[in-house]
Amino acid sequence: MDHPQCHSLPQDLSDSLKEATMEVHTQAENAEFMRNFQKGQVTRKGFKLVMASLYHVYVALEEEIERNKDDPVFAPLYFPEELHRRAALEQDMAFWYGPRWQEAVPYTAATHRYVDRLQQVGRREPELLVAHAYTRYLGDLSGGQILKKIVQKALDLPSSGEGLAFFTFPNIASANKFKQLYRSRMNTLEMTPEVRQKVIEEAKTAFLLNIQLFEELQELLTQDPEDQRPSQTAGLHPHASSQVQGEDLLAAPYPVTVTVAVALYGMPTSLPLVLATPSP
Ligand code: HEM
Image 1: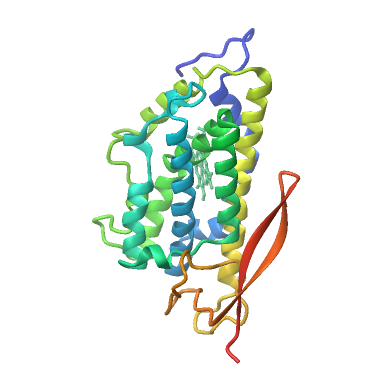
Image 2: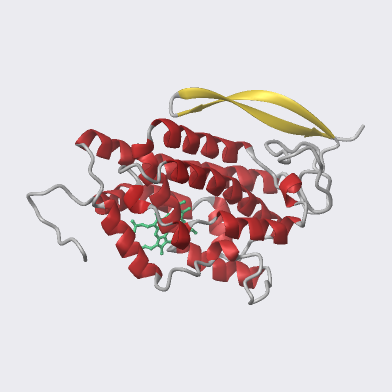
């Protein structure tokens, strides 16, 4: 341990975060999508969907990190060479969605909510960005490595790692040592007790946003029996106007845009949903 516990001092932020998110971590592991994943029950469709969501999430997260890289509330955690996933996810998107992936990658409602929150934090409350970076990057360096092996086997993917660049951190020799370094940097951040409490709450929110994403993806998969055209598929729309064919859920002949109100963090947020209606 870098920081032996001292009874008269407050706990290190890294320990507080781990402790405070233990329950939501268990909840995340037990989300149906994740439970199936751990059993090797992951389909190409499901995997493509979750990777597409992660693509949008990391674009937003890393844009906000770049915005705040010189701000002392985040600067000690700026490790673009080691951690940043956008370039890796772009490679994965090309593998899974083809050369015109930018038009084909779905952008679901729960992904939207997660991106909105990241942007809000990065722009208005950058002192909370640590919570989001912690939740994703330390997760990727922990359970993410287990998930990589599972998916490689389940989907019979090439050992070259194609389609799984997201899970590979070429500039990190030891995930455990890097996590230690990251924790020690988190512990150097200066913050008032009030901000510290908000950071802890934000980390729980970050986990919940991930859980909501899994729940939505599971719902979309359940609604889409393999060989049947879905009669109603909510929550998905391609990033641009072109439609995705074949196995994808997005083959919506007549997209209709509706607006639903979703209460998140006590504030109503309007989100566009695209409902696919059946062919007449
Ligand atoms: C099937 C799903 C998952 C499995 C099997 C899994 C497994 C693990 C394992 C084994 C660790 C290491 C614990 C340790 O070193 O003490 C870990 C840590 C972590 N996981 Fe997960 N995890 C899963 C899902 C998630 C999700 C969805 C998130 C958040 C998006 C997440 C975020 C984290 C974080 C932030 C840590 C670091 C905790 C810390 O050391 O402070 N995990 N996970």
